[in-house]
Length: 96
Image (cartoon, helix red, strand yellow):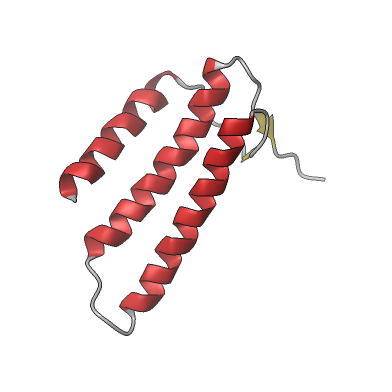
């Protein structure tokens, strides 16, 4: 599982190197596949939180938690990459 985590981190770093730096929160929108990546990311975050809760009552491999965390980070960056590659603007969250 460590190799999978490292692979995700490497891919995140590659994409993050050329993507514009974030200056605010972005909303999941702009492209159908990017939006689906955001949905998958939220599912990963939920699974991560559930695994953390489970770890309070039973033994859980901490690498599984770390993997879910990195996978959700990867899906976030992948969504940004899809928008960037398709020349679609990221929609930034604006406080009312």
